[in-house]
Image 1 (cartoon, each protein chain N blue to C red):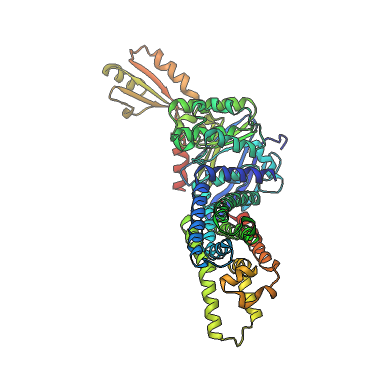
Image 2: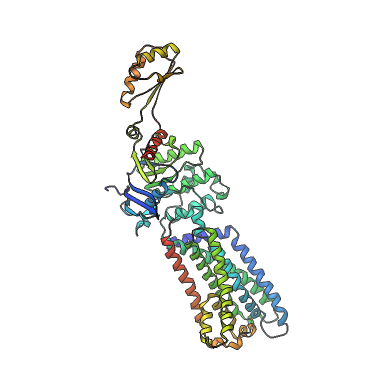
Length: 277
Length: 308
């Protein structure tokens, strides 16, 4: 446990030192504020909390953004150290290989959480303070859920990044694989699903199966959690008609995402254990 | 296997697919002993070091380090007693030298109180607070050495510890090795700087194409390689012909050219021969006795395998 903590601390120290956290936090805050500004235009006179608008637009775009930065943060973590020659030194120390992965994962998770919580959080507070609706009447629960699920979504892709990084032998290949994984989960999966539904025209695939297929993907689970999760965001995102909240227990998307964190990470440990250094 | 601080390698074989990196290596290192591993690039030096560190498993054969087999469960904790300097010491540029050593000391569960002492030992005290990215190649190499010394290890594995170092720093590295040897540390070092090793290594292991050609002290290697010392005598023209006449039975005329006599002779005869030359009463300008150096020994051992 101590070894994991030592490695995690060094990752955090390094992330802080090379300004990674600062840059990503600023980018995320700017991102959230711009979306809030855009979102405040159409709501104008309605009684809907501007924060709820922000949650919907942020959730739709975080699905692209967060996986990308999470993969960028970790695709290099093992293969890069192996190429630079620092891995062989690290492994000559009294530390098990799974502890290296666990430590690096914890460190990366801290960095990503800081960026998400500080970036989105500060933007959220700014929106809450400037809105006409009273501060306490804002959609804070939806916003908190957005923050936490964004961290969880990030963790999923950190974990996938470690799997890529420990399986491949070259940095270039790992970078390509990271982009491939990103494309698959944020774009191709949904496009494929859309195509499937369109060609099937509701014959073979029922709502039940559709929900199942949607849930299987961590990014769609994230969407379901944030867009359908509460009635306010569901109306805004145009998903209210689906009344999905009655069919999916709230815990299901969370469980799916947790599984997407644990399984690739366990895979990364197993692959790394057999890796030749 | 009486002493726990030893390294035993027995018939170790390591192959990567079709490529056989090491073929039946036998090597033992006792506490307080310094063994130098020499060989061409790709001869298997780093592979052998990886096997001893437990970073790779031998395909066959046994390895025993401090009473345990590297790579098995429980060996992880023993790594505390091993100091390792990799071939290319690389550290995260964004951290300072002190932060780097602190990280490694923590991993070894060693105290971070005596880091100053380590910095002093490798002459990096002034640069300790600077970022590693500002270090020169030699400074990084010395930081790597300081890293290997953390926690007073009982085994030191140094993969080319003197590459990129100036003569002063090289001398310092060997002084540290001497000091550690006196403390009973087993030292295994690999190097291409053969001339440096002559007086410093207790034994030299010559690795060639994955095989251990020889492993013995330098005088022993010299003897078994069949290399003999040479007596060089410089003298004037007349004196030279006098010498040639005297040794006509034993040496060809070709040995006496250009005012220099080159007399190759069996090791046990060198003092007798020296006396004989001096007792001739011929005026000579200079006389010197050269022993075959490690480079010649190395060449002799590695050439012979090419013929085979």
